[in-house]
Amino acid sequence: MPELTYLNWPFFEPHHRDLARDFRAWADREIAPMADREPRDESGLDALARELVKRLAAGGWLQYSVPAPWGGKHETLDVRALCLMRETLAQYSGMSDFSFVMQGLGSGPISLFGSEDLRRRYLPGVADGSRIAAFALSEPESGSDVAAMATEARRDGDHYVIDGEKTLISNGGIADQYVVFARTGEAPGAKGLSALVVEADAPGFSVTERFDVIAPHPLGRLKFDGCRVPASNLLGNPGDGFKIAMSSLDVFRSTVGAAALGFARRAHDEALAQAKKRISFGKPLADYQLIQAKLADMALKIDAAALLVYRSAWTKDTQGGRVTREAAMAKLYATESAQEVVDEAVQIFGGMGVVDGVTVERLYREVRALRIYEGTSEIQKLIIAGQALADSE
Ligand code: COS
Image (cartoon, rainbow, N blue to C red):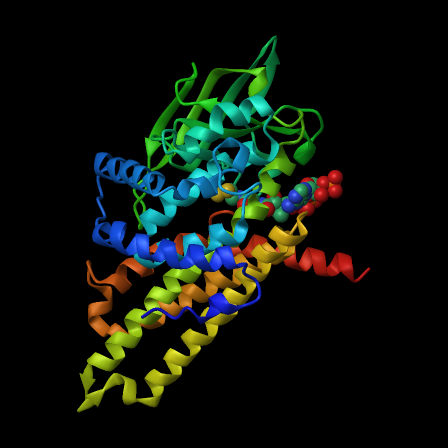
């Protein structure tokens, strides 16, 4: 039985507690039976991603990815709900978590900054699973340093013409719509970027490469070669791109922490079961204090991560505005500590812990990228230190 007492914490409303229980019951039925499917080939992966989006949509769960007027559940994105759902899905499979969150992240800038027309055109399809969404920020020569991006969008009459490349883009190759960040040149650096919605069939758009990664999911390299999109596909105003990217990450970084928390909880559960079952030197591993110390450290890290994740989500939901520091702390601690928790679970499993097909081996691969994407741990530290220094002035 999973440990659910944290749902009694004051961060949650009654509807969050109901959601956590209902969603877990649904995932037990609908996701658990497919959790071990891990196709390595491109077509198998794409098919699984599409199936997961359809399944999540059929359950009504993608309604949490967009605001209410455009097919969503709540008036604004409910970060606590998104966190509870990612935490739950990650306990079953990384792929299900991936397919869920990309609908929210990929459409987040439209939810937050899109015109009425763009929201009406692109959000209902995300919520009903008929359109797959992607968020295209990183480039071959600019990952952490967003303001250094080279992709350009030039105004040409009623259109923007985009030239450049994006890389390591989740859902790249299967998405129907991409939020693309590009330099429009209103000012140097961060103040000269804009965000546009690009449809997968836009002229001049192509997916030039797909990547094999340790935890496989659709991931591609995008090329924009004189790619024309209507000027009305611009999100916010010209020059708002950096703010749009960072505001979206303010919402979704806490949810990365939540996914890490889910991986850690599953690893802890696996480790507890193994420690009770495995006999070594005549008694169960769980009887050894060295193993108990590991189990205690894991439990402590899980609760500390959960406190930071739900503090951040609660702050965003109830106070609004920027939660850059809280989200950075939640992502940094939850992802780093989850890696340690999963590593200890592998250690408790001994040799079986690194065998293909054993759950902790999969978790070990699935948790790794979370310390990198949506801002590396090093970037989160810069954000936290930057705010602490500013506050001390
Ligand atoms: N919400 C709204 N505005 C924000 C913001 C946020 N969360 N964060 C920054 N801004 C604004 C700032 O207010 C500032 O505007 P003003 O000059 O008008 O005050 C502007 O954006 C520049 O901000 P800042 O000076 O803090 O930017 P830096 O270049 O110092 O640092 C970092 C930016 C490194 C923190 C940022 O580029 C970052 O998070 N990088 C990681 C990117 C990432 O996550 N990549 C992964 C791709 S997605 S998988």
